[in-house]
Image (cartoon, rainbow, N blue to C red):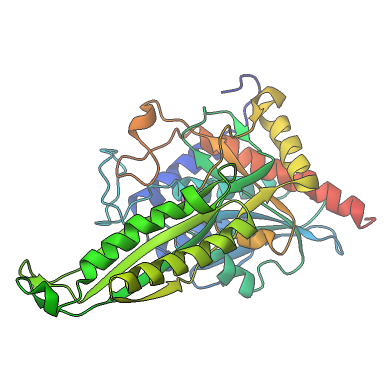
Length: 395
Ligand code: NI
């Protein structure tokens, strides 16, 4: 942690920890974040900040600024994951099979902390707070955008807790920081039959197994090795009994890439390989991309410079870093950046237990000192970007 002046005022940190733990205790899946949203609205009301419901279970709130200046949008995601928590924390999930295993409880608390820091300030530009639902299914950002959440917005900023980075560090990385993420579904149809008479059947399990293996040659043989890409099959469903040849199999997976042309090439290749491999085994395959696909996030230009400036003010230049390696994780924050310039950072939040508590695992946890870093950065980037937007509009 950087020493010296505290990142946030007395009390703000304690209130963030309290709200984070409350939300952590009652995690809600995508599109079901109604209690979380209610808690957010209660807090906004205490702070005197007007809000409205948007995009299903989302909440949009506004801090006013000078007329005619575009707003700076700050975004937090609110949804949890279908994971049974095994952290042993005394504020562990009380909702069976649901857990905040990606730190979105922390992001929500950070944005409320930033709201408290900014409330009552004379701001250079209006600030729009986006409490977004359904990030984990890649659909919440689009829902908020369709509800008008970016109307009048000139720039958008957000960040993610990163337990791979030390607390006190903000990574504002130039270039691609999150990959495009597209879910796909392949359905194979063969012919069901007696396990002892394979010549009378078309075995969908054997055909689908060949498809899984064939798909793994796409990245290694068709994509430039210098350009990051992943094809993962995460789900394989087939069969009804040990003595019945399966007539149907379903594969689901995800396609990740940093570049739009690689993304498009992978879509075509996965479909081609799946259909042709199935046909080689006399089965018929269909390929579909699932809804909720998101593009990559590329940080660049003025928005990146403003994010770095704000980070330097909060944690000191020496604690503003870049991610060391390409990240193939998806993040629907990318959808906002299709409409307005923005930047997506990572807040160092390494847990003292280190690698034993990775994101999307039932042991996930982060160092709560990161909450103050996130809140202070969000507030500061609203000020920095607000000044830039005001100056650009001649205000
Ligand atoms: Ni996340």
